[in-house]
Length: 234
Image (cartoon, rainbow, N blue to C red; front, side, top):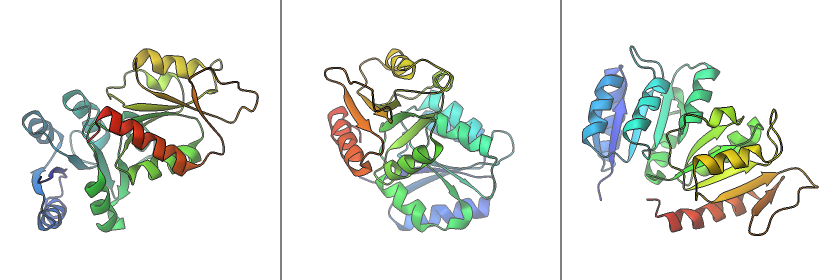
């Protein structure tokens, strides 16, 4: 089946170059010069991936991401930018992002991500360890998973994604032990929860799946693959 991509960038020359590369690879590509046009495309077409610039007139990439989640919660999104503030990237990752790439990094990485990207394959990740979050997000992106990351319980509020699984640290700063897990269960009832923790005295409950830090990333990803298949993630 032909893959459909939406490329959003006010730099028409760059957008057309990306579109040409993707078309040559056998994909169908729509172009949008800004966030407003992109949202109109999303209301009419089911895309496999959205590729958008971060800095644009009108809606920024992060602002577009927030609004498109209301239209299509399950579409993977890749943010491209020559420049971005850390706060903008963090906000985008909280809303659910397949990857953030520098425009200077070339197209090989982008093509690989697009080839493996899956619709409706979002994982919620709650952990204040930035290095772990970045490493896990990278590992999951190579398998096509979108990651919606939060460092605090408060950052979970207002999410518009529909995850097939959640990875939750049992101890998140600023809240009682287990508060993050309970909040995720409230927001996404029935979603499989995998507990990640460095707390040695933590005693898992019957039926609870626990990955103790430092855990085997490959084993965690393999477990998510099983859960994704059960959920029918494309």
